Amino acid sequence: MRNLAFLLLAILGFAACGDDDAQPKDPAATVNLNFRALYNGNPLVLYQPLDYPDGKQIRLQNFNFFVSKIKLLGEGTTPDYQLSGIEFFDFVGNQDATAAEKPLTRNYEKVPLGTYKGISIDFGVPSELNNANSGSLPSDNPLRQHFASHYWSDWDSYIFMKSEGIYDSTGDGVFNQSDIGFEHHPGTNEVLTSVTLLQPIVLTDKLVYDLNLFGDVYEIYVHEGVALDLSDPANKNTQSLSDLPLAKSLMNHWLSALSL
Amino acid sequence: MKKILFLLLFGILTLMAACKDDDDGGGTFNGEDLTNIAYEPTPHELVIPKGLPSMNIPADNPLTEQGIELGRRLFYDPILSKDSTISCSSCHSLKFSFNDVKAISPGVGGLLGTRSSMSLINIGFQNNGLFWDGRSLTLEDQALHPVENPVEMAEIWDNVEVKLQRSADYKKRFREAFGISNSLEITKELAAKALAQFERTLISANSRYDKKRWQLDPNPFLLSDLEVDGQKIYYDDLLGTAGAPTGHCAHCHDGSALYSSEVYRNNAITQVASLDDFPDKGRGEVTKLRSDNGMFKSSSLRNIALTAPYMHDGRFQTLEEVIEHYNSGGHYAENVVTGSITTLNLTDYDKKALLAFLHTLTDTSYYNNPAFQNPFK
Image (cartoon, rainbow over all chains, first blue to last red; front, side, top):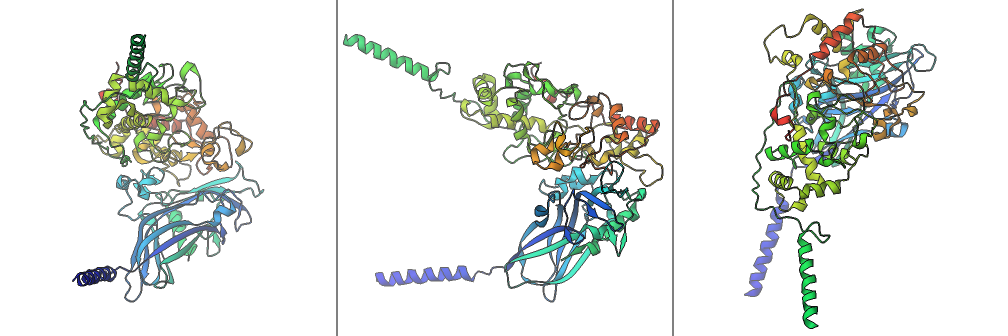
């Protein structure tokens, strides 16, 4: 009798274990989005002279931007999957070659397995969030974290990208007061730019996937072989409402500046 | 003889027992039981005015009426300083937008540091570091520093804790605010929490420009034409129009109703041969990045007309001098963002307009708020 009871208990135990194992688990992966900033194919180092196509040099001091609706594009039976609604990337740490090699990384867990045909990213802040109300978002939201520095109250818009530096307009190889500082701060809903990159992203055979993105600042300033004339005072600052065409073109150049 | 020995022993034991309960007796003081005092904290709901962002309130330090009131008392009480001459309010006076009117605020014994005090108005909304160099990330951490700074309060927290633990009033208030059960549980961390709670209530958003910008007042003539022209210069509204004035002010002083973008910048006030030569390295001292040397946090321009002198070292006596500095472009250095800190070529009218606009950021509506005033007067 005792043996029988023991046997029953053992069977029950096994059965219980079996149930646990049989519980459906959503197959999922972790995607690490690694974003590197480049200048003409090389890691972007701030405060270092960078060759400009006109034979002169520029030096960047700040480079940061918002991206939104980062989406994996589904293929076949795999639906689209949004990795993140909003992110802020600031390359302030790119102050030497070693630091510039390291990407800024965001981790997204529980990404459904499947075959994705590529990725789409909006550069800027979606119109529904692009207003003062985003300052009331929880403190861990990038739009709240960077509200003071990037919300431009006079437009009721965020500054989508800050690219600040100096252009050696005299061409003497020395950056000083005689040269032209530039401060490009495009914002407003009109300049939001969507970029789609098609390259298969297969999340079926591994649970951790590194998605490496590269943003080349050179491509933002030099588009299809034509460089923005930084000697022209009209191109010194971009504030969108007053310089909408320039702001739009700089943001549109993300189409060629971004690569996988 | 036995009797005498017994009496002696009894006397010694009695004395020892007495010492144990006497904090002045040199024995072990076990503190005072406070559980007979009611602990019924009342949550305090902050009302965030239009134009201001959300406030980050740590989960372990929610605002309560009792905590805020304790913080107000600590803020105004010189008990925090070595010789009971300096309180937080000595350098952060209500009538100067919780600032003072000194280039460098004197501490205990009149000792001077190297930097000007900062306004505390709307300090609770800041989330990119506190102090001119951003070395503290939270108000709770910030509040710990001035007490032990030798040129500020010059005290040590151990002493402050003892002083607070001996005060009947503070024992009661710490119990009511934080539910401590024994007076020895009064710590610097709790004092800092109370100070932070009070500071989070120091909200101002009722300047004439606030009223216009956030449509708090339907009067279409809240700002004069001169002030409106100044606003356009401040926000670069005319940028792109050839010959139109632009001040680039808002690049560092926007953040909506904060009037601070909370960025660290070298605002070109110090002439140096290289980035290594700043007499005060500011942000660079904290981050250890050479490119951050000489950078300081862009302070809020709310109530700027009340908080002279200006800059981290109080070098400019008037707003006119400040405008003149920025109009000149200042001193070049590698880390100056010369896209906006550059020669502006403002006319006398432009400068006057900009000055007029800066005055529209003044809000004195909280002056008479009893919740902000010195409770000891």
